[in-house]
Amino acid sequence: METTAELPTAHRKHAADPPDPPRKPQHHKIKIVLEGESASEKGENAAQEREYAHTKAKTGSGKVKYTVANAKYAGPEESISDIDMHVGDTVTYWTDVVGAEVRIVFPECSPFRDDHVKGTEVLGNQALTLLTPGDLESRCYLKLEDGRILGWSPDYPDAGGDNHVRRP
Image (cartoon, rainbow, N blue to C red; front, side, top):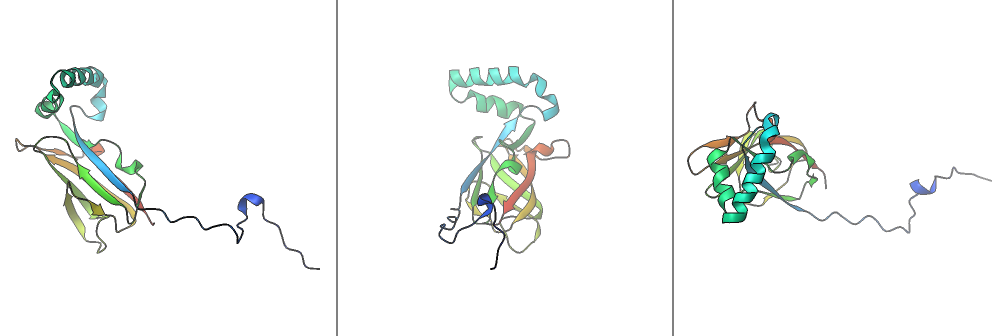
């Protein structure tokens, strides 16, 4: 009589079990925002946030104008490294800062190209398809109406991050 080792129930896969459904491609909207202080200066930020909220409540758009006039930095609203991205998903980088242009630079390879060319960039407000898996560094920038360019620098690395792109 032949015996076989039995796998624990949690590790057993039955032929009758349906396969896991394929993951549907997701669309990620990554908002690039202005900030008045770097992460190390955020101690004063709570008072500024209250002032922004009060101004916006009164005027509807005062927060944006006030922020643009006093902005020191620009970067993603949420950490790019925390976004669950897969090959086949689409990404749109955007901002609600009036007249600003979004630019994302990839010092190494871009997740939106499959040719592994280094030092490329993409512009905002367009849906881009993720083609390359890996941990791919990005740097975010906003070009404002007044000509200033705010974004990633060695002093403000939070304006970028690694795009963790997994296989589908």
